[in-house]
Amino acid sequence: MDTLKTPRPQETMAGYVKRIRKNLKMTQFELAGAAGIHPRSVGKIERGHVTKVNHKTMVGLAMALGIPVEYLDAASKGNDIKSNIGVKFCPHCWNPTNELQQQWSDVKAKFCYLCGTQLRTNCANCGEMVMSLRHRYCPICGHPYKEK
Image 1 (tube, rainbow, N blue to C red):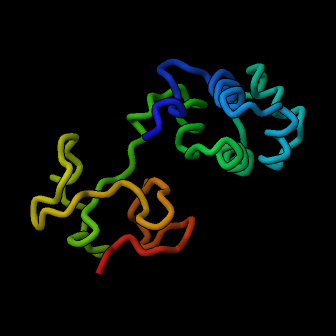
Image 2 (cartoon, helix red, strand yellow; image 1 turned 90 degrees about the horizontal axis):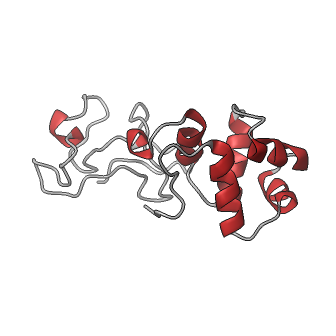
């Protein structure tokens, strides 16, 4: 996890977007173009006039800033990023028809207690955080979560 790009505790979405944009040496106009939104929208977000943004805008900003959508979501809700850690699972032992093993969700767990494989919280192909194992495939790239 890139600590320079993670939201700081108690950081608002306005401050977070502005900080990341300035670290990337982008203007508001450049950010708006890369995110596919109106240039005035970036200004409104950075001044704190907009507290809720739609999913399309959130995804566009995340892609333009090179950060996960979960970081923006956490900053907009005022949550600590640690509360948005993805679902932990073993790519070998996980079975989509069964529930997750409770031991995998332990904060200290790093390896599967059944086979010793390192637990995952993100897609092996694109790196997108796994927020739910309701589906067998990554919604971003279509790569299966279960390894053979």
